[in-house]
Image 1 (cartoon, rainbow, N blue to C red):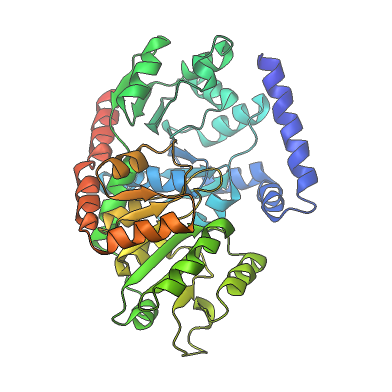
Image 2 (tube, helix red, strand yellow):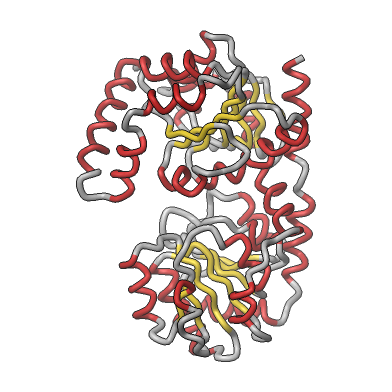
Length: 404
C-alpha cells in the first residue's frame, strides 16, 4: 500500500502540472513550489529548532492561529515556520507577521519529507484538523520530533476505520497526541487502539470570539450601512447569490453586503448581472450612489464585516459544504445556510438551539429571514460561541506538559 500511495502522489503532481496550463489555482500551486528547497534553505537556515505549523488552507490557519499566537505570547523569541498545502491559504497569509518563514509544503514524497525535516529541524510539529501526510509523519517520527494534531475531527466513514484502512491507521500511529473536537472523534480513535487523546474542542471558537471583541473598523462599510439593517452574505457561490435576489426585492429597507467566496472577475460579473444596481467595494469612492447591495471584491474583510450585520447568510451549502458560520455567530448574528451542512457540528448545534436555519429554496429563505427578523436568536448564537471557548488554553498547557 505504501508504494501505491507514493505512486499516487507522483501522479497527483503530474496532474496538477497539466492543470496549471489552464487553471489559475493549479498554476499558483506549481509556481509556489518552484525552487522550494532553495526557499526553505534561505528562510530557515538561521532558525534554531523552530516550531513547525502546517495548514491545508486558510480555514485551517484560522483554526490553528490561536495556538500559534499564544505560543508567541508566552515566548516571543520562539521561531515559527508555517507551511501551506493550498494557494488559497498561502497567498492570503504569506506575509503573516508572527511567522519567521512561510512556505508551500513540498509534495509528500519520501525524499521531499526527509529533506524538509532535515533542513528545518523543528522542535515539534503541529498539524490542524485533518492533514495526514504519511511520509512527513514517518520522517518526523524517525527523527523523534513530536507531532500533534489540533482541532482534529473524525467520522466513521473515514478510511482509518474501514477494514481496508490498515495503512492509514498506521499513519495515525506516528502522532504523539491528538486534540479532538468531540467525543465521537475520541471514541473512534480509541476503537483502533489510539489513546493519546484529549477532547479539547475547536480552536476556531477561541479565534472568532477574540475577533468579535476587537474587530477592525471599516469606515467605508459604516458609510454604506448608515442606519439600515444589514444582511451579510459571506463566502457565497452563484447558487447562493441567486436566492438573495428575491430577498433583496422583498425587503427594500434592508441592505445586503455580499462577500463571495471567489472574487475573480467572471464571478463578480455574475453577481452584477443579478444585482445591476449594486456597488463594488473597489469603486465605492468613485460612485457615491445610494444602493441596496454592496459587493466585496477583495479578500480578507469578511470576519470584520459581520459586526455591521443583523442576519447572516453563509454560502457553500449548495455545494461541497457550508463555510464558516462561527464568525457571524460570534457577533450575535443568527445564520441561514443551504442544505449541505452535515459535516459541521457547529451548524447542527446552532440549528438545535434555534440560532440557525437550513434552507433549500427561496421560499424557505424568505421564511427563515422573517423568523430571524422578529426573534432574539442572535443572543443565543453569541452565547453558544462564548460557551465553547477554551480549546487553545487546554492545548497549550498539555503540549507544555508533554515537552517537559
